[in-house]
Image (cartoon, rainbow, N blue to C red; front, side):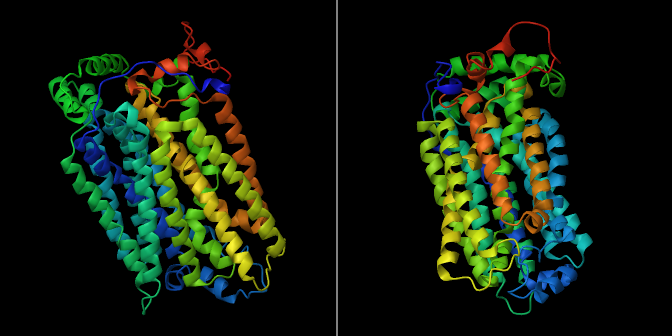
Length: 510
């Protein structure tokens, strides 16, 4: 296979799939609820007239003044409004860096608990907000919660899960994100109909529920064996490993984990160590995979699906219903990913999903160009057009949901050795949040100026990232997490980075 996708380590540990490991992964994966709930709720709330009138009156006046014959591309172009949404991701970026130290020093579980608590507090402030400042403060606290959760949960899941099922169990984090989005869209659909215009408070304040679910659920968890060993808790680590593997004979795996822990103790500065030549291949993927995940354009639809449909003339309720439909598709497609990722591998899902998204981007480009043109005046939209756009979006979302969505969290969390794992995951989260912020901040401006060309932009990105995956990503399915380095050593394009020589800070070329 091109790119060395078939390389494996050849090592295997005896394991059983136990109810304890399933329960542990379900509870830990609930951290995705807070991220998903916010993704779903923010776009819906910003399409509610009462919310816009109270906090963003200029946007509201511009919206109600736009007639069907006017330019539909530009009526939501407001940097203040998009700052409300994207300020959260700057906070998540900053907190993910702090979370790296907490994860390594206090354990994955404690970091997750902080995430749930911060998110719940931020939700309360947003629910009672009376001005934009309160909204921003609440969003910042939500961002802290998401940063802590996204940094610690994928690592925790990859360390807890048996290597044969690591892909499926890790993707439960993405499934929780999708459930959060689905619940948020359902709530938005009903709160938008509440008389008196206070439904947005229920939507924003309702975030306290997933925050508390995650926070309280962590009390029923123990840290991963890897994390316990990292903090010299050898006896507790072995007992925990026996429980989650369902067998008493865990000597081989425990010894490998202990060796990895010993190596980790030699590296007191993981942020410096991660820049050395031997970690260059993994570092490249820790940066590029979350970057590419954002450049698929998926978050554009999640953030602004209600706004997009509203701009297309669907109306308030129809736009939220369309967002609800796409959330259901997202959920079902993520189940497909769980069922197939450990059977067909990461590369196969990446490439198939990329092709599917590309085809749908082209369909949407032609459809919107034919109706909206460059003027942004669609006239009266026929039913066939509306159905075509919704179908294309659903197929597109399905392609993302069984490829770049879950794998964007899975692959970075499983490819790094213990000594730099926390720092590496912080980089992954930071890159994810930086580009989530950037795309959220500039999306309405890009839509206003690029018009249907926005879909061409993301289509070109999908082509580029698919080629990169085909040429450079090693297949990681079925490889024990502490044996992952062997995959890169045996890869034809990355093996040169493991030649013994002192070139720690030499920036080599791919």
